[in-house]
Image (cartoon, rainbow, N blue to C red; front, top):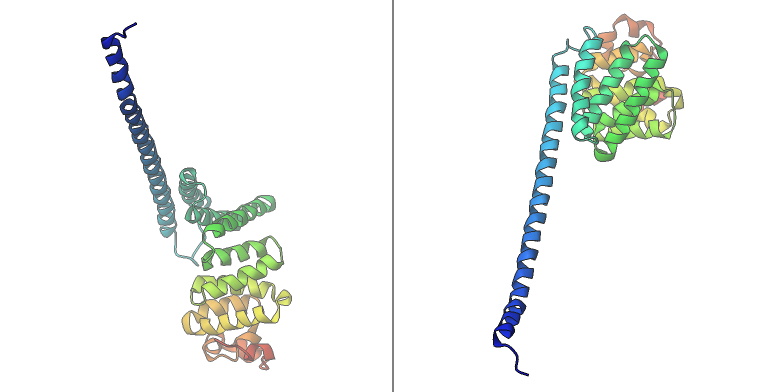
Length: 259
């Protein structure tokens, strides 16, 4: 029986076309996959951009507050700034900058709250946010200092507090706000500090004499620890009669500092 030449030709054409069609389909699938990947990258970039924008708006809002020391921000101001950070976290839930800003607003709420439970809840929220932010920015001295501050407000004197003080000092030895924060915390927990951390506090006081002695003295004065500063000329000039009336014998630990 003879085969039909036309049928045989059609079969050969289909056989030869098969790999071409298959390759075309694979190429199309690759293009679709690439398009999806690029679309996802673009969407993520947009989310990061919007998250950063709202975090910056929050920072700008804080920048418009009355200068520190004159009066604390009110509830409306805090709420506006907090909303920007909340919007930022809505785009990127783990943004360390938004978490840090939101944590700072939690502490601001705590400071103006007249309800103990509400204030405690705000500090707990801040503590969680600072810890989450540190997972991504473990070299930020500001985050470590704020973490130490929340531990003080939570009345938790433990290894996490001590580690936060050490890290903040090591990473930001010349950052005024960092040093002022850890000194405030350290003096509040002086009796619980080991020799190494007490030396950190004393070094902070000596560094502060060259940078912002008045602010450092205000912190020391709030704890009435004149024994730590009255041997340093810059602080004696500020203290005046306070140092004259204080016991002039400085504790040995206050004379063994190293910069």
